Image 1 (tube, rainbow, N blue to C red):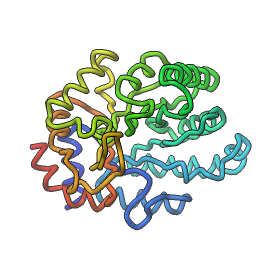
Image 2: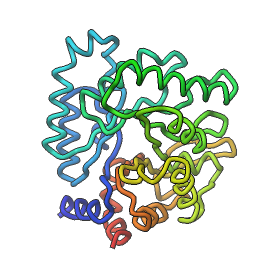
Image 3: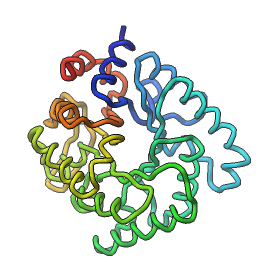
Image 4: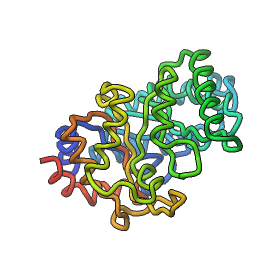
Amino acid sequence: MIRKKALKIQDRLGMRIGIPYGTQTIPVVHNRSDVLKVFGELYRLGLKAFVLPKELFADIKTSTDLYKTWYGELLKIREEAKKLNIELSLHYPDLPESPDELLKIYCTIASIMDCQLFIIRPNFYQRMPAQQALKLVIYKINEIVGELRAKAKIGIEVTGRADELGDLEDVVEIVKRTTNTEPVLNWAHLHARGAGAIRSQKDIRTDIEYVNKALGTGWLKSAFFFFSGVSYSPKGEIAHIPYAKSDLKLEWLIRECMASGIRGTLIFEDPDRDKFILNILDVLADMVR
């Protein structure tokens, strides 16, 4: 019954719903056994998307590690995901200031695993002025993409702190000036950067229309969203918090997705993970009627 309801909600919404990193019982997957257990739980619940954490690949330090030791494991995980119709993405949210080798390795991993996106945050040059950092991020992404010719696209995620590179304008500018990239809208981060900026469905529509105007509407066919409750200060994000304690309302996003015909992936980054989705299935069902 749960699986059937979740699949129906996703069909009506036109978006795959999923979670990042793991479940309540396995918060972060660290090996293939963990991943397969999480896949089984996602399938049971009817969820169709999963974001792989960087921790799963912590032992891959070089291309030699990737191809000699891990290649077979990656293929097995990929095939199980395909079998269960679970869309994969890969997230590395805290790249260092010299990200070259990590970008190369993780872009390759994402391509081998047929990931929808390899998602990064563009805040890895933190010791320089914003405009200089923006130019370097654009240069670095183009350099890596041009060298690798990887299949997986790089997702550029909105960041949560007001004092770091990665507001919506930065993300759009990076995507406009790079190849093989897509915007990733993290609604909790957008809300927190503006110290509670999203107060209605209209605010969400304004952000979507901004991206449409800059990039065209093509991205709406495969949009990628993160959503969670969030606490914040005037400086931006403090922490992800349970949805019930947040002033960011899911209904605004769901209504706008349906009104605008948005298709793609919606990842719930709630601290309660899969339990959160279980608890709001009836609410979600009402929203998409």
